[in-house]
Length: 94
Image 1 (tube, helix red, strand yellow):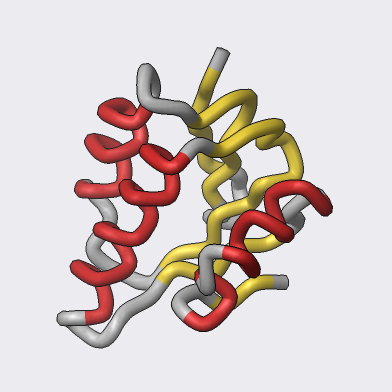
Image 2: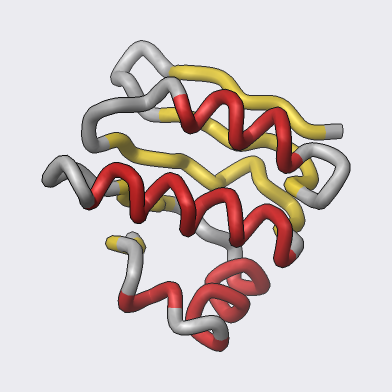
């Protein structure tokens, strides 16, 4: 299961498992974002390399126009994946 929803504060919550089977859904959603945004991973259980690739592509695209992605509420496992992959230098993590 994977879902994406917006909060009333404007944050974007990723829920479930972002793997290869759901990467197109995430890519489509993120391609509609044109300004800086905050992704809330408090409900994200798993992210694969395909999911990381989607996030990286969105970050690169947004950076070209002076915007970025901030990621909050990562669980320990996902935070470790981001650090090992060097994504803690690519994204603003909280």
